[in-house]
Image 1: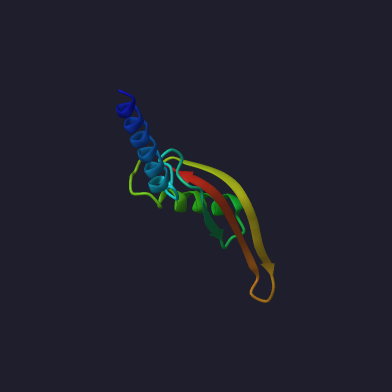
Image 2 (image 1 turned 90 degrees about the vertical axis):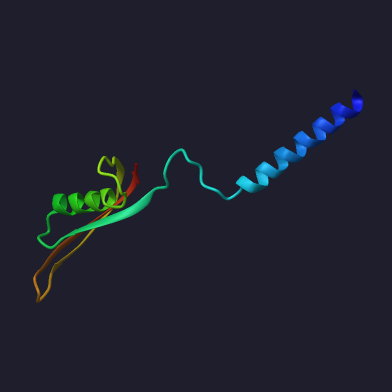
Length: 97
């Protein structure tokens, strides 16, 4: 009886150790990883740039019922100059599911 119990515990320990090694470095299947997406408006419209960034996030998945949870990370722009720039770029960090 004692021998069977030791064998069982040894096998249980080896199995747990093997599972830990094999699962190391793998992503969990819970929350998808966050990624950055950007949108640019040549008219200087922040709302248009944000809409383009969210659309880029939605387009990154292959199903039509995508949900995007996003956080505004950066707004940058370029104005003036000889060319008369009015460019705004919005960058978001998003989870897409």
